[in-house]
Amino acid sequence: MKKNLFKTRLLSFAAFCGLALAFASCANEDVAQGTTGTETDNDKNLTTFVAGDEAKTRTSMDYTSGNFYWEAGDKIYVKDDDGTWQVSSNAPTSKVASFQFKVPGKFNNSTTYKVYYPGKNGSNDQVTIPAAQTQATPNTTTHFGESGDCGTADATGTAGGGVFSFSLDHQAAILVFQPYTSNIVLKDCYLTKIEVNSDNDITHTYTLNSTTGELTGTGTGKQITLTTQGTGSYANGFPLTNSAVNMATNGAYMLIKPGTHTLKVRYWVKDIVTNVEGTITKTLPSFNYAKNTYYDMTANLDVKNYDGDHYYMWDAQKQYWDGWEWTKNLPGGQPTLYSGSSSSNYAQNNSDLRYYHEGGGSGRFDATQSCAGLINANAMSWYCVYGDPRWDADELWTTMGHLYKGGMWFKKKSVLTAEGHYDTEKSADGITDLRTTWRNYTNTPSQVLPSAADASNYFYLPSLGQYDLGQLVIIGWLGGYWSSTAASNSSIGAYAFTFTGSNVIVQFYERKVGYRAQPFSDFGDN
Image (cartoon, rainbow, N blue to C red):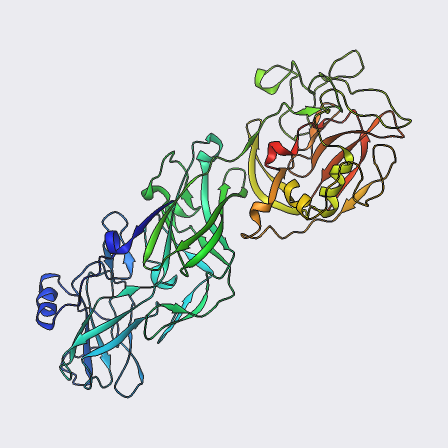
């Protein structure tokens, strides 16, 4: 993550201009006089507040040049000599470099007045950083005024002189998202929105402090969603055709309250051909996001890919499609879609090394082949009961050349162990050893995702489905993972860990089913 200070790249705030210099700069910078409403220059009741000649003191930003501008409808607020809030009677009608704001009220008693810019959704000293922000085209910042951009300034002039000059000090922090991908599947997809979750407040209504100018107050909003859709070529969102950072392609800006935040960013991506829309999640460590600063948030959106080689009948010597892998493109080879098609080229008897491990049925029987390195059923039960399963219907991933979504978040082994909820010798009731005594465990998952603060305590298991009678079924809907434990009372059953959006189960299944024989550590468990 790259941090750029406005004072060095974007805003470059200069000392306040003197009155004569302010007038000179107005001529040189073509200070706009276009207004909304009616303005009379000779009206003795209006005081002129001139935004200084620095082009870097405005309310929208050009990322490449570093220039800032006032936008149509921008207004300022000032307390007059009577302590009454006054709002400028005019506003720009288009994007301009500088502007002369006309403010009613009495401004005769002081050489300095505090200027407030609360954004287009605020008034006086009240600023709203909204939870819903919208950017219609890439690398544009015209939405800043509606999205919580705000600032203060000490306007200086001559008491009773009728003209004061100021340079705005912006108070929000800006995240500049710059996604890219080399994933071929995503090249035809669009970025539809960016969702940012924090461990503390980043959105609410705040007060601009009259002394420091900074945002004060504690909010309750911990999630902001930036919609990246407009019209025309951007009606579907911003394209993901770039394999390197390219602001012109999909650069996106979000304003947040400054502070120390742990952020979880969910990039929403949609395939408009298949109508599949899902998320790619990035978690960022705690960091101090300062006011008046922008942060380059580059993100490689190459989604996690899972191979097709880890499907096994329980403890078979070879994987379910050995010799018929999908990568060989053989007729009658490994099915890669949940389409109802099947292949007969799977193991159908014990003469085939891909057939399940037979034996047991009258006591403990442990795997010795492909499932030997997996956790046992006892350990699996703790993930089921105490793993705080959380269903994620939107996280995207690929397997065997196709895009899918759906999976479950579970607490990591290290977290379970620290909480006293992990044991390989006894199952989750603290009594039963599933290796010798049959029982099952079930749980109902939450539909609420792990928070930004807790995200690092969880790992994600994708719903990779299963092979049954040579057919790929319920991929994206069910996850099935073998244990190293055979059922003590069945010669054809073995324990597996399965889940859907509505349940998590540890029980025994027929050994002929093609579940994943893969350790949880491969998926980020530790």
